[in-house]
Image 1 (cartoon, rainbow, N blue to C red):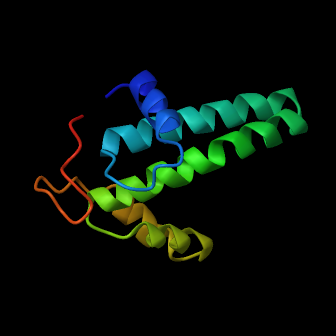
Image 2: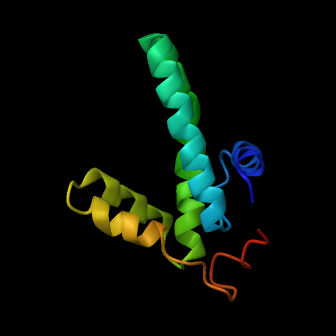
Image 3: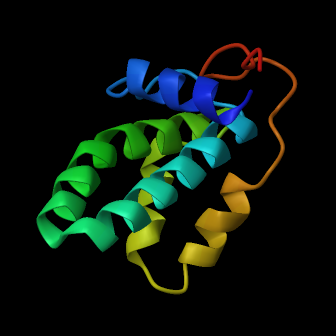
Length: 110
């Protein structure tokens, strides 16, 4: 999956917290999000705020789907609110996909 496919998929499933997302889908979307936020931050703080607001729901949805891909609940995203636990969340997000089906569905195709 490339960056364009990832962004299209994440915006198409922007409120879909079910299913699974591959590692490439998640990390390409995160890269695109960071690039957009950096660029809009240089433009104006209101533009940055609007971009961040527009990207928050797709980011949460793809994060939950990424955690589902390794067999974890999407609620583990709340670990991002605890300073030291961010490392645990990062560890979960870089894990390889489970090759077999799990409680959240079949493995992603890309």
